[in-house]
Image (cartoon, rainbow, N blue to C red; front, side):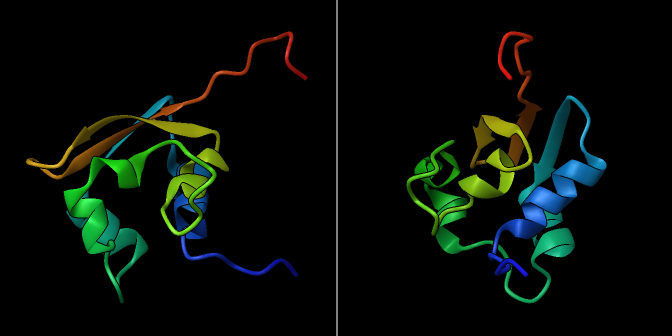
Length: 93
């Protein structure tokens, strides 16, 4: 069995609940996905935490990238994130 990573819950949530666009508030993410720990403080204060970047597994990117989503909007002041479903081109197999 594959080792569960901290942000696999994001992958699962987006795969099972996502449409073409998903907007989540930080409070929703805390309550739905990380009820025991909440989001890391850096996710609330640094836009870089939400970068669509596989190279930093300590951040959450692989959680949404593995679900075929990308972050398209970050509002730290109002505490919400918008994910869009990645559309695969027909020529990509």
